[in-house]
Image (cartoon, rainbow, N blue to C red; front, side):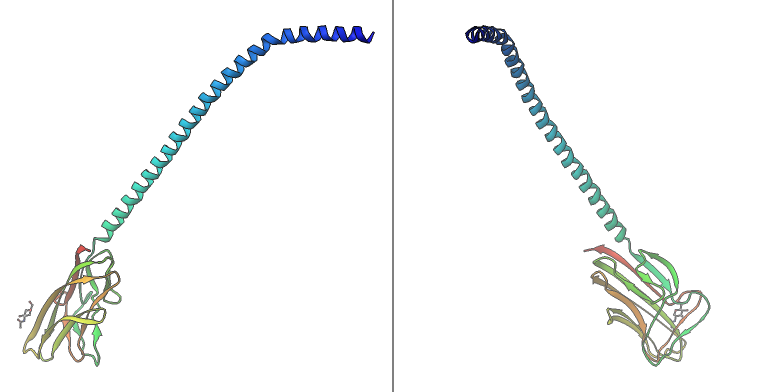
Length: 213
Ligand SMILES: *[C@@H]1O[C@H](CO)[C@@H](O)[C@H](O)[C@H]1NC(C)=O
């Protein structure tokens, strides 16, 4: 009985192996196809990765260009610096004399492009490193000395002086200065001297950036 069973099993086994042989060939062919497909997918994936990374690089490039453009735009904006102001916003009168030097605060702002001049303090603060031109004009009535200086960070650069003019005095000076960001420019009245102003704006202060450095 056992022998018969074994024989049957052997028969069945060999016929099963025979039956399976051709499907196995098919599977191998399919596997080969899959393998090829896999390789193609792999290549496709590599290409995609490459395209994506190139796209990423392009995006970065575009962003960098945008940033650069923004920087240039901001720099250009900062390069627009010019102001002009008369001493009195309205009315007529003398400023001074004082026991001490007095910063002249020019109140009638004609222009202040870049807002570098502060009409509350009379001080101009350089917004960009560059070469600037400043000039001031002072007028006074007679009988008392008129003297005004222009200072950079508290140090006198140039001045005007009229020693007890008989009827009235006028003086003007200007200077080209190389400034760092934050350098401060203002004018002051010497002690015991005066200046005069009225709606004609005889006494004034102006400055502008010639070129950045
Ligand atoms: C000073 O300037 C004013 C305004 O231009 C003028 O009227 C006056 O005559 C000048 N004074 C002198 C002493 O030149």
